[in-house]
Every structure is written in structure tokens, then in C-alpha cells.
Amino acid sequence: MSPGPMSLIIIAIVALIIFGPKKLPEFGKAVGSSLREFKNATKGLVDDDDSTKKAAEQKDAVEQKDAK
Image 1 (cartoon, one colour):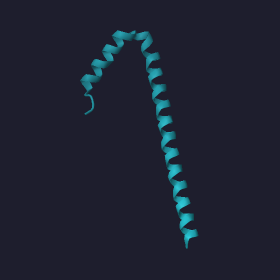
Image 2 (cartoon, one colour):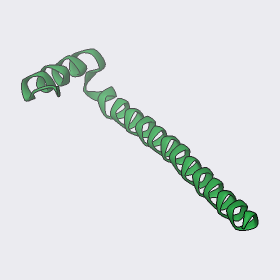
Image 3 (cartoon, one colour):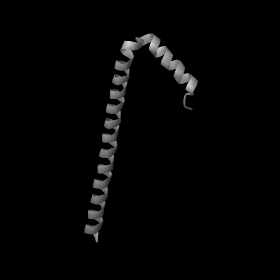
């Protein structure tokens, strides 16, 4: 269940009160950078998993070919 528009507005107002208008853009930039790094790291893990699967499939194919 995703937060509704009213919840997002309340969160934005609370963040504005806590951090102030001067610090809010810096905070948003830091959060965006962190999310980007997290996405890149998880993408790397998925790519590693795919390459491991491909290597295992190739090894199985070679073993089956040698068994014949």
C-alpha cells in the first residue's frame, strides 16, 4: 500500500519544518545520491548472478558434450 497524496504533503511539511528551507535541497541531493548508489550496487549483484548462471550452463553443456 503506497502513501496517499495527503501523507506525502504532511511528510514534506514536517521535513521542511525539521530541516528548514536552506538544508532541504542538500538533504534531497544526499538521499538521491544514496538511492543511486544502492541501485547501482544491487544491479551489480544481479549482473554477477546472471554471469554465474551463464557460466554454470556453459559448464553443464560442455560436460554433457564430453559425456557423449
